Image (cartoon, rainbow, N blue to C red; front, side):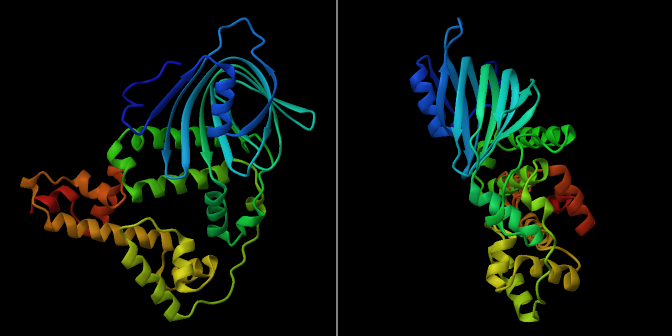
Length: 327
């Protein structure tokens, strides 16, 4: 496995290697998914497993190289495992239907059904998303009940969407996981987790895509005020639309409609506006001579894309963040 040492640097990346096949299978069961081995190490190549792994809260991301041939059957536990094939040969078998993969393909291991996997000399980047995170992301935007979430295929809806998943993982890996300071920031990690979950729901066929919007009832003004107060009080912590709705005592979908109708925005956009305002205040009050930078303040409030932060800041306040910091 050839890796970029700079990309996978930092104490948050953990390495594991073994030449013992039983030890390797035990590691896969702990880190990814439970499997029953049907055929193991029937090739002439020397066996070896090497991994580099890290976590974003309850989301795990890892690069794995497995140098021999195995046939296994999964015993899923509800979590979602999505992989980007870098090298080697994969075949996924479900109900006698076989899906053969090539390097560059993206696939998932069905979270609620067993699946046969035949793999040989592979290098793969895998992301494991917990069921609770997926249910939250599925239930928030359209009123769909996360308890009804089911994934229906190992393949992306389209090749283009498969590439979108890979691009999203690449962004998280290069822009966040490469920086230990960002990894330790709960606002940044919460946004990255939500981004990965929402992208998974958009890329792979699942029951939430067929859900019909259920607007629910109206939101009284006092509930909207409670929602706004909750955002104002928790802007320095990770927060989801479901949490805001719970604080207001209304359904998430009803809350979204109320924000659009009365404030001309969404709850998520309002959270971003509040955090932008907090960053603005910090820039006004900061002393550049102490080493405080625009980047430090932007990251403090969960803004990882500095170009987008600067554009939004200039649109809101008429000057750049650096101009405010220098005043």
